[in-house]
Image 1 (cartoon, helix red, strand yellow):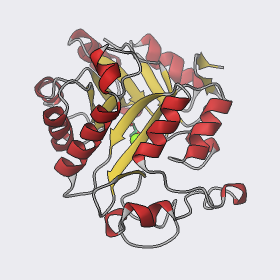
Image 2 (image 1 turned 180 degrees about the vertical axis):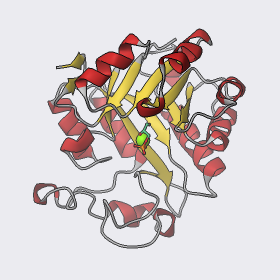
Image 3 (image 1 turned 120 degrees about the horizontal axis):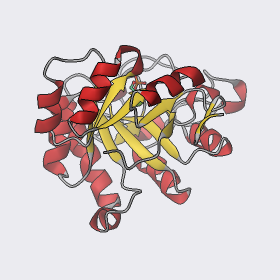
Length: 250
Ligand code: G3P
Ligand code: MG
């Protein structure tokens, strides 16, 4: 069952602001969004930061891996200029800063654990522990603002489950693995997150019939949003927060 918002701004503000930045969250807010998906990985010193790519070069000028730098070095880097001059100096956010902003503004979070290769367990554990420490009260009173952790990495999700069993988890899949149902059950996931391009009505029915919430990434077309909702999709994230609003296609 899906008890969360139905429409999420992908990577903060979708494609209207630099991804995974506070400016992106602000852009989402400006478009009426109070729900977000974003990506988290570990810096060299084990501190989680909000980044999609495990390397520098696309959204942050520079070279090397995210895990080659301490968090203090990463937050001093410019994650905005690549997108546009007016975002120059927009920093790489610490996970805790990003979460603080969301809590302050009542933004619900789907936290995607995005480990670099070899860091699956450490990333799942660190993100779950920090999230649990921050949301202890909300978890205890089953508050709807408790975030949902998701990951393509079943190792990261298993580590998150071990570290914070009472935080909800979702299995993220791209190509549909034949054992997706077993994976979701072992992880005690509440939802399965699928690539909408690979979803079929039959798969949607299987996921729903098995009792899971069904979420899709990343839907940037209003007609497609309507089509998959008719298949039973509960929620989705979008880059086009201008076309698909917090209540659905605008
Ligand atoms: O969480 C869903 C979606 O964000 C997965 O793809 O590459 O945009 O993180 P990606
Ligand atoms: Mg993501």
